Length: 489
Image (cartoon, rainbow, N blue to C red; front, side):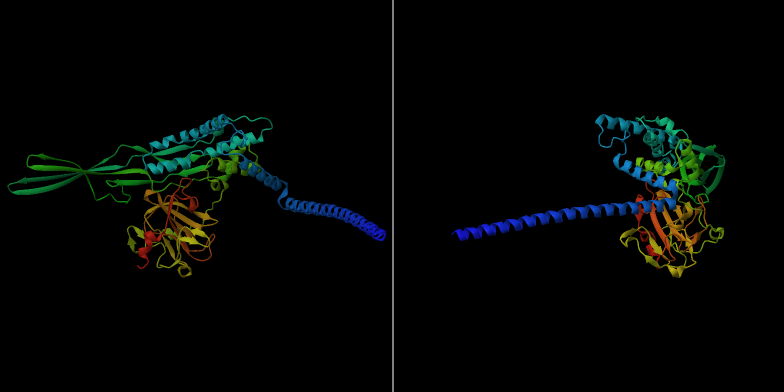
């Protein structure tokens, strides 16, 4: 029994020594791992620091100190825009009371009211109500700019927040309007006299012409950043038609008897007015815009900040216009002066590529995105003339990095057709065009994979008649209007 005990004791001692050795070993290994881990962390941090410093040096060398400040400014703006809601003027993010929220909204409304008041006189222009609504949106001082200037002042303040007077923010922003006097509009009265006696009836017709009273027509909108010409057109009544010749129809006035005669009078008249078939392009001179911002104390490196703040404040702010993302385009006077070809017509529509009916890509989903037009012509149409698809007025003719040389034609009811990727165009803004008239040459300018005409039929949206297709009020499959013409030559 004692032998067993001594063996047990020996075994226990051995086990304890073994356990102690293992514990010590574990501790040594653990300490070693900790030291190694700390060393590796230090090494990684040193390496990361060197990489970051190297990247910053490379960036600094490439873009310079000002460029680096711009990047940091953009990051700060991004954080501010993420944290601050549209009407959070006191920059408290989600920590505002209901009273503060209401005060913010009332303050913001002052900017909106001032913007609306500055274009109120457009309500006196005789034009389609929808045209007036869109023209007011286009020409009124964008309240987002005034709001951006106010927020810029708030952000740049070192202590406290004082909301600027909205009237002060609008100084220099309000548009002015110019008119011309029309003195040669004409009215025609036709008198038809039919007299009957026992010997038979005779009919005579007299037309009396007289000049209508003079009236004023809007021709120019001036903003601090540029001028927007307003096209005028002579409308013929009855019927409000745009053809260059007086209408054949007459409007009945009255008929009365005089002796053996029946005397009936009719009228027709002309009226010069704004061309309300399309809202004109807003001409923005980016350099004038920058000069205006400088006059308000904005530093050059903060221009992008103003644009972002304005874009965030007002959904109608179209910042690409203020960035100067437009070009002159390749204008060729010889194109628009050519004779109008004999083309097939259907309900006032003409096929927009001369002597070619090929469709290379349809309207609808394509390559994971949506294709807002039809691609016509293809390589077989190289050098072909592009034709206006419908009577209208040219709203835009310029170069775009995406559309290349492109033209927008406005039509009645706010509809517009777009012609993109042309080699050159031969029409100018404000020019009247008729269906089938040459307006450009097919090409592959802009973001294009080959020769073709990208053709769109749209209705303008609320921001601007020149925004990207996906933001338009309505987009139509062009084949709804010209599809039946494909088989005709």
